[in-house]
Length: 270
Image (cartoon, rainbow, N blue to C red; front, side, top):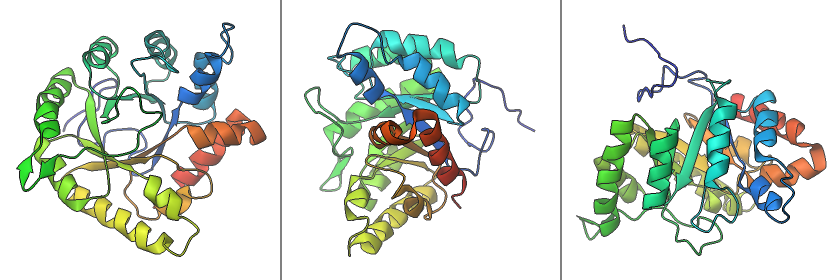
């Protein structure tokens, strides 16, 4: 029988603590953005990570950008030290696989690296990878192939940021990432409107298709306490990464209480 070893990626996922429960990864980018407004070091990214972990978060997500507008490489190194005492809590590094990001991943060896096709000037991620056009692999697909191979060799779980497009998800499966992360802005915009069921069904179909192709499914972007539970009725979503709304809601409810509220919704998912 294969043994689960802390710190070593198990691509089947059932060895991971909380398998079968949707895991909450708290994105700390907005905390770092606020910190960077003045040279005082507050709020502390590492302290907020500790609070999130103590409140039950299953993971911490960071998205360092080339201009260091929020999370800095130094933050990532400090977070690995903080999380060393909590081996069940995973670090997820997001970003476009530019050389600087890949060098950071080599040094830190996070549990997961989520590859996102954002340009340096974008304020936030706003689309998934386009991996097939006219039935043929795109330049993006050819670029990702060696990066995914590199992550496998490092023992880092890979995830590709994808729209709920069945054809593109099939193209993603051909590149053999471990997971995809569904870009959920369209769902969040439709939530509470007459299109909610239609768009929810689209994401449910995308999730099922990915699972049929052997991919794990994460989700993220514009999720909040109001819309998360409905999304997770799809079932089988491994992880949600939430930062902007969580940080905003924490201004009202407190950071620890807000993390606990998200954990409760995630862990109640089918």
